[in-house]
Image (tube, rainbow, N blue to C red):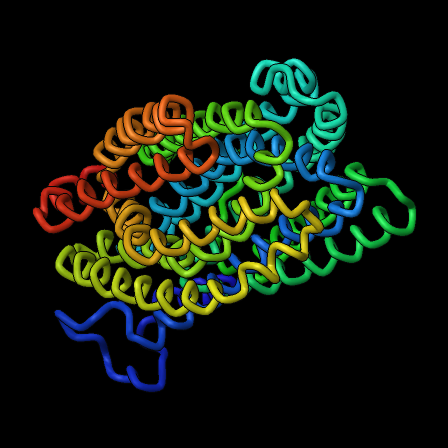
Length: 469
């Protein structure tokens, strides 16, 4: 039974009613219908992920701006730490996608098992460090912030740290499902987790009056549920013949780390830079922290289609590279990039008229709400013009093993454009929080230029077959 279900993954591209005949050489690996079936659930899942963060902030807003700020400063750290094992999941999904493209069942099983081993160990280590050094980390990063904000931040940080291993296993299982072209499963589990989170928020925040602790506890329970359900589905329904081993397979692990380490360094340094900017934001006071938290949450919605398409590119380009179809890999990069732009224009033009009503949901003061509105409007405009070129193409290049180039460009652009320019614009030119956001979009522009040039030049092709043997 397991083998039959596994073989179905390899036959997936020929199972559509419009593709009943045998695939001939040169035929597209992915039909339009298959791309839609892959991308649409990813969009819904990304929306649900953003709404989980929004639910925490909106529902805890009744406890005051200090509570919102406390969650915000911890979430910034969480993104950095979670990104470390997220990078390993990305490395595992790229390697697995390439083996699927080669129809190598044995190595798919090994890569899947080694992914869980690597991510599980890393997430446990990160959890231990954050539990022990909870307070010192917050004080190191944010320094002298309000006592109430620090108190709320410590509570939320402690509880959210407990969820790291569960989130790591969920992300790894979801990545494997997506790699096989099945993104519907993670979407459905994410929906259940969001409903659990909202119900938990209502119970712990409004009924038991637990404030920030209630928001953290609700998030923890929803992540535990997600991990258990995803792992059970992956194991019992056997979409992947995973080979679980507690001993490292050096060859497979080296392939995962080839993608995961540069991706992890890139993500970690990127998030570290954002932490420095969070510290700069905190220096502008509680109003700036709250406005930044609200604007960042809503702006996460504005980039969802591009984020979903970027995730889909790992599966699509990875399988094309594994099959030796580099021309198709480039074609799909262009096709999905165009789709991302169309979606972002439609979404952001629809959101802009409702920015003021959205701000009112967070119960902010008038001055804070006005600042959040300016940030969101500026982000919407830049998002429609620059964002897909900056962030969609990177996943396509990573899936083709061109990871060192993306890492180098991202790190240099982050520190030179986003960090240096943020301090110059916000402090020297006196633009405050808005200056930080302008520097962010300058970083986007530089990335867009380098990544689009790389794809068009074709230099990424020389790396496509280096990792998988």
